[in-house]
Image (tube, rainbow, N blue to C red; front, side, top):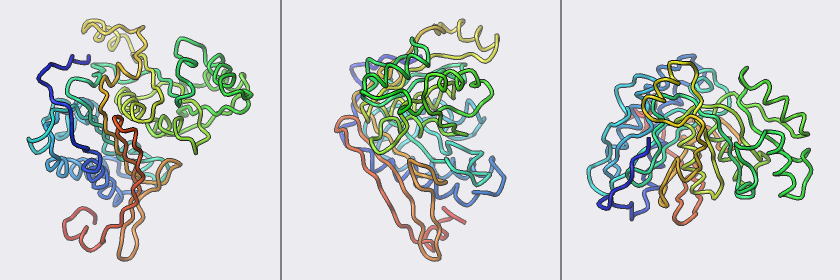
Length: 333
């Protein structure tokens, strides 16, 4: 569970966002060599190595709260690992070097590299629970939609708040067998369903982007992605609510033994309890939120999004990298 920040914890006074985008760019560039090659482990390993090497240069004293170790048994970026150059603020770090290893390996849409940073002790740790039931919406859904309501009522209430018809609402849902009833209920309310194969962090972000037609995210997805999505929502002014979703009796018993309330709905501010949050993501393969890595004859193009909650600033960064120099430092093959 989330620790309570102490009075000695230092807030990140400087804007770390542009340091962090170098981290996600490096991971995306390294992963791009494995797009469509069918090897998820190699892609993830390349992204983890690249992300870890750049994180070592970032001016912060970071501790990984959401990392690779718990789900992938990775030797780096594991929960509890200390990262950064040892200077700067004390922070919690959530990482997903590849959100969407399957899309990367199969050459499909929807993969990106993601990192979020917030004041030390502010990020929720989901313990033994791998999945959470989630709801995400933009600012217009605040105080309107909730996991306490049925999916049908959420569609109707959001449509009412927007002075629109339920037919104008689009709900993103992971395309999983467990969501069949949810999909049917959302459609019965009159809304459109956008089925997504992977990447519910990007889908959560899209609900708060004015140029997107995604209005809600509903359904069960990864617990780490809930914290990353909440970090993005702290920057965007939207919301991400989540409730622990044990997969079996063993997970349920483990969570109860550690004092996790399984019926509790965690608000955005409980998932990331800081007013100073940084979020960065770089596309690996094409998606609605971000373009994927483009490798040309001499240059490589990356497309990123960078956000900070304190200022409410959202930047889109298109960066050109010299292919020969990337190969020279073995960031791309």
